[in-house]
Length: 272
Ligand code: ADP
Ligand code: MG
Image (cartoon, rainbow, N blue to C red; front, side, top):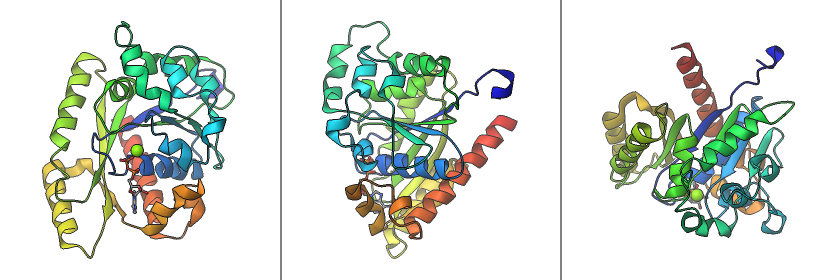
């Protein structure tokens, strides 16, 4: 720990799924908030040009002076892109639409896949009184260079999977990409877990999808399922995580349970 003068290394978890609308951003915001609520110091890196994680955390576009674009373009340190949020202990490096162009801009750079990893390393080396314990990376809905940068920088992948008929369809492609990144760029990369989102107990299909995913992926699937809950979808328009918007609702409670499951898995990994 920091008593010995060696800052603890943050755990870098990436929220990835090349499908849009499956709950990546919602999970980044609310898992991040839940982890912060139980005492972790959390940084969310918004790597989606749409910037929904930044907006959902109350960071309006005008105040995004330095973004993850500037970090990946080599124009800023990650430290300079970090701003606080409405949640104590939760910080964000916001994104801007400039990110749409980054892939072409750095396509010929030798370090193009490692830019984020290097930026995180530099952040850890820079002096911070209280270091981050978790870094959550919110990815765009694509297996592009941004997602590759995230996977190269990460310790583990957390896959949000929507409880719908085609849920498993994209999963094997994602797992293949993770395997490729592991063998070519980041040998330590693991699958942290799969989180089932927008579960609707009244829908028989939802239950069938859950059974299929659990059979296919076994213990990789978190026990916690995030229910479909209107409060979860309302919160971003108020610039707040659902845990601040309505702590008692089923969605908030599920994200708190997910956070403790994530921490349990972390402990198990550390003990192994
Ligand atoms: P992604 O980042 O994978 O594209 P989002 O997190 O933005 O997905 O979620 C897609 C949409 O679904 C958003 O409008 C979000 O508010 C909504 N949503 C996500 N999770 C839930 C939930 N548990 N209940 C209700 N709506 C949800
Ligand atoms: Mg998103």
